[in-house]
Image 1: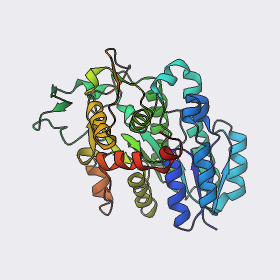
Image 2: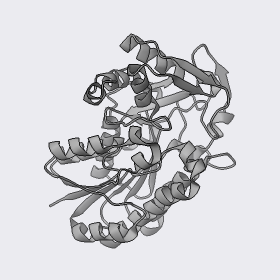
Image 3: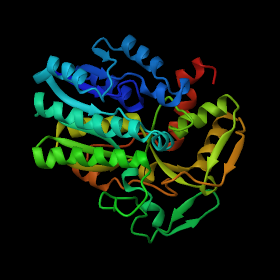
Image 4: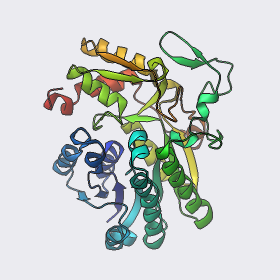
Length: 355
């Protein structure tokens, strides 16, 4: 028996990973207690995803365990022990706004939860690769210091700018405002690297841009493309928060991301870090995303502009994928932003819920 442990198994990335590794023949152990419902209310609940995963994957089993609880995690790791081939850690508190209002919960989930998992990996399955889903928010608002120019529908860098192709892993994480969420994820990102560099575990931190896909339970505070589509199909208003709605995000489909995980699993490294997102292949501003959804649904979306931006929010962020592509040249992107949005609109989840 070869076991993959996936935290956040009913979330966007976790559920994509569950399906992928079950199809590869692994026994998949999910760890997810639907904290998204606690964070974001009914909109954020992932119960529908869990039910779908259990129905479609005989090799999947989910434990409703909180990653802050070391003793309960220990029981799972002890049970599967040396059969564990891979750990994929996706569970998180993912919202800037929630992190600011509840910093202790935010830190304990994102930082302490990650430390618990690393310690148990070291204790029971030190040869198994450990994949951590980090975030581009480790860079705080430093990307906002870049010289950007205003265009009709987006903020953009000049082609002569050294970061035009995207933010690379050498970009500074210091002397900036991170948001509380960004701080807790930065701790987790760095401790994952440290267990690789110092302890020798096969660890990686993937610093993700905007990750999305059909299993995304988009909510007001997290998952903007999914949430935007949901609002469109329910004919509700969307709030553009700061920067005239022209802030740029790169968008990566969860399927493309999980294929990154697969490449790393086959050829793991120790204490590695990669910026991962849509890159120049798949990116848009908020306004451009609204326009894409409107053109695909023929539904005009009501818009509200809020002038004050979120603390630490990026005006422009595109991931530079050069390092990952150099280390793993077989990886290819399948989805651009337009294709992602079209799939979100057509997904069974949205249709079933009459969005």
